Image (spheres, rainbow, N blue to C red):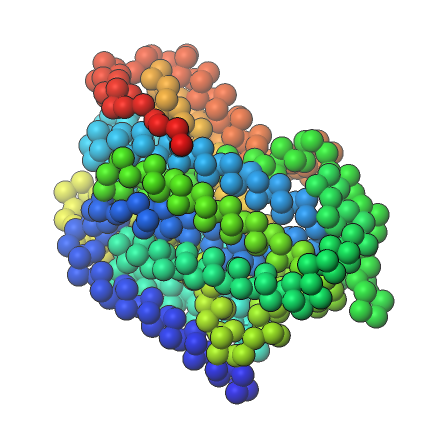
Length: 524
C-alpha cells in the first residue's frame, strides 16, 4: 500500500471511529426497549428528523450512482430523475408526514410500517402485517446490496484491493454498527453524515470545475457531445460488444443523440412516487417528538435535497469534461466522484471527502438492515409466531435476522460489475409500488378496506417484477420505469377491491375521522 493510500485510510478510519462512538453512546438508551431500538422513542427534533430522513434515503447512489448516469449519457436521465425526486420529497413531507405521525399513535402506537398498516385496519389475523414484512425483507435485501456494492467499489478503487474482499469488510462494519445502537444511533449518525455528504458534494463540484478548465470550458466541451446537455435528448456512448466505450486519443466517442420523449420524462419523474412507500423516510415522520415540528423539518429537508441532487448531477457533467476517457463502461462511470477527489486533493483531505461516500452508504444500509430486521422480529416473530415474546427475545431475533439479511445482500453484491443506480431503481420501485398507494389511501380514503390493502400490496409488488422482467423487454412504450405502471396498478386494485368488499367497521371509521379532525396541513 502506498503512502498516499495510507494517509487516505487514516482519514477514513478517523471518520469511522466517530460513527462507532455515536453507536456506543446511544447503545444503552437504545437497548432499553424495542420501541427505543426501532423508533427512538419518538424523541427526534426537526433537524435530526429531516437530515436523517434524507441521508438514509439518498445512500451511496447520490455520490456515485447519479453522477455516474450523468457522466455516461448526459443530463436528461439524471436531471429528470432528480426533479422527480425533489417533487416527491416535497409532497411526501407536505401531505403524508403529519397525518402519518398522528395516525401511527392512534393506531395502537405503531412503531413499524407493518405495525401501522395492520393496526390501521384493526387486524386480528395479521395478514397485512406478514405480507408487508415479507416484502420489506425482499426489497431491503436488494437495497442493502447496492450499499455494499458502493463500499466495494470505493475501497477497491482507493486501495487497489480485490472488490469482493472490500465489499465484505464494508458490510461487516455496517452490520456491527447497526447492531450496537439501533434507530437512535443510526439517526444521530445520519444527521452528521448528511452534513458530510453535502460538504463533499459541494467541494467536489468546485474541484471538478477547476480541473475541467472553468465553467465556460465545461459547457463548451459538453455541447460538442450530441444530446449531452439536452433535457429532451440523450447522449449515446459508442460501445463495442464488451460494453466498453470507443475512444480516439483523449476523446470518447458518441453516436447521434437519442430522442427523449414525454413518456420517458414521466417514467423518470415517477421516481418521486417512490417516496410515499419508503419505510426509511416514513419512519422518521413517525419518530419526531412533536407533529408541529414537521413543517420545520420539511423546509430543512427540501433545502438539503435540492442542493444535493443538483450538485450530484453537475458532478457527472463536469467529470466527463475533466476526465473524458477515465471511465468507459456504465459501471465504471460511477467512480467519477472518486476520480475527481483522488486526483486533485492531498491524500488526508481526500480521505475525509471520501468519507462522504462512506457516510451515504452507512446512513442508508443501517436503515435498511434495521427496518428489515424489525419486520421479522417485531412483526412476524412477536406479531404472529410468539405473541408473548419478551423485548429481550425480540432484540435477539432482530440481530440474528439482521446478520442473515446482510449475508443475502452481500451475495447479491458479489458482482463487481453491478451498477448501483440499476439496483437502487428496482428496490425503489418495489417499495414505491408495494406501500406507496396503500399509504396514501390509508391516510386519506376512509373507504379503504383490509382486502383492498392486501390486493394493493401484492398487486403492486407483483407488477414491479412482471414489468421489469417481462413486459419492459417488449421495448417501445413498454420500456418505461416499472414504478409508474406498478403504482397505477396498485392504486386501481385498492379502489376496485375496496368498493367490492364490505365497508370498514365503525371503529376503523372512527379512528380515521379522529385523525382527519386533528388539524389541517399548513402550506409553506
